[in-house]
Image (cartoon, rainbow, N blue to C red; front, side, top):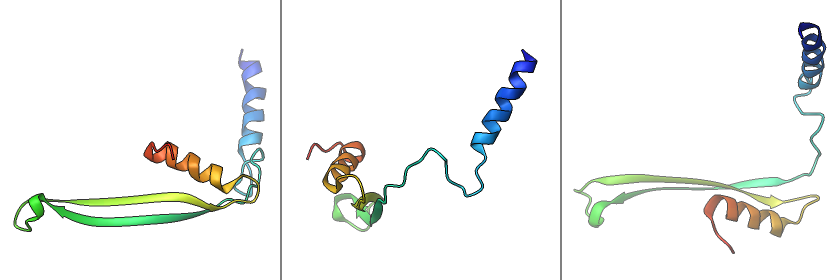
Length: 86
């Protein structure tokens, strides 16, 4: 068992170490992303003397794509992150 484990570990180490920081199995698809950031303070009953909550939302979405359809990518992101069926 130990004799078999050593070559397996060596192969895993070879494939997991990559000098340029990228996986050898990834493809280049040229997707560009943008971010919408919203930060707002909301007071209970619109009264500044009452308790409040800070709301921060950051949404990252695709704005361009080299190979995949941009409309499909944006629809996928909205469905997965917001539950929208638009």
